[in-house]
Length: 137
Image (cartoon, rainbow, N blue to C red; front, side, top):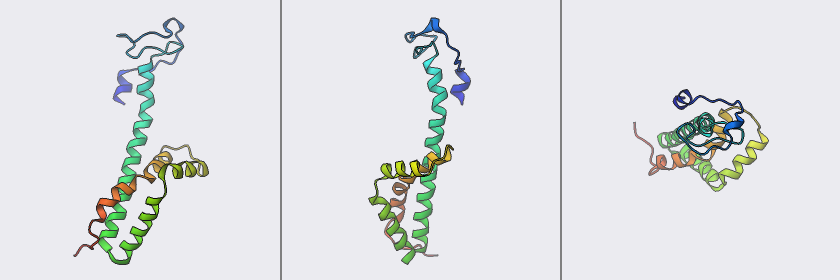
């Protein structure tokens, strides 16, 4: 939001400034109706950065939760979680995300974050499984 405060977004057409080259006034130039490309990029990237952050945090939390439960309880719980994890490791994540996105449509920020974190939690889980011995209390 700092970039958005420093670079105001003016979406009104200004046909006199069409296709301007990069300059001190327009660092990335202007588009076909004279709008500043840098301002559009800064304002458009806020949602993408929020989506990436939310999906990374969700993947990390899922991986830590499953890995910690398996390591703490051990035994058949660890074996069952390991079995489910191995099943998810065999499924290609991107095609599965596309199928789920088509079947379960939602326009919220959290839904795309869930789809992106779906395939990423496996990377966080693998180091937590360690040697497979349960923790002693």
